[in-house]
Image (cartoon, rainbow, N blue to C red; front, top):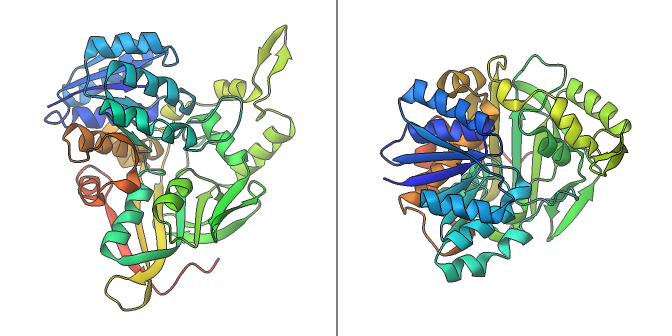
Length: 403
């Protein structure tokens, strides 16, 4: 039985809070806060209708550390679950340190003025959390999060070492919109338009954004173009799986998405540089995000499946030589919406946020300091994935990916 405070009121938060309410034996008191209280109230109302559980709601600016500290001290949670924007990671971590409470998030810190997300800022908090006797768990979403747990499960149960790793993220859903993103538009577009990077032979190899892609046949979706991108779990995997010779991240995009994104880039709408408009400074990408459909509104119209997994090649644990395994989850947009009122992209991040929180509040995962998912025992997390809507499968392939 535990009290938790969730920050943020988007689609991921909605899924996480719904799933927490469905596990009242673990999460006895749920509190939800964001800059816009009416969004929290809407989630709380849905949770009450679906589960009968109450969720307390609050208005808070997560970047205002003193206000955050006051709210945390008022609620006295055992854990703060940060499902707000990555820009807000550090202020929330500061508030947790001052208030004396552990911390969890799903995405690493990214400065507002630079499209560069990496762990160095949060890893620098390790000693502070260790000295305070608090735990901070980073990246408990799907990617990052489940993909890292998948990798470590393979290393624990199938492979003595991992030489080559490919993470493949396919959203095969159709939301019926001309152009929309399935998670926060600002974060999504910053990720997609940033240069691609992958880990190879002990260094980062950079290529222009969206310049490398391959066709891949995804189960329950079909063939899609998968584009080479940089994603933050590559950084932590390269650190915690030091024998990796190559690690890459691939994400699928449809032709219409690429067409619209190219036009938006060409006219400057994806820029994060301030521009003057009617005497005020605005950020074009933030304005674009404000006019695009909100991801949390796409659930009712989105049909199809997501397919996210890892293909790992390395020395087999049983001494039988080199082997390749493919471990993945397939999630239905329709099923996710029926259960929580959200589409599968939010679902596949919100459920792991709940599971990571459960690991911490039940003290299954413990420690003092800042930790990544790769440092934790994968088995209990993997068991909860099967129990709470994200079942996984693993198969042996004939060999490594050919691209």
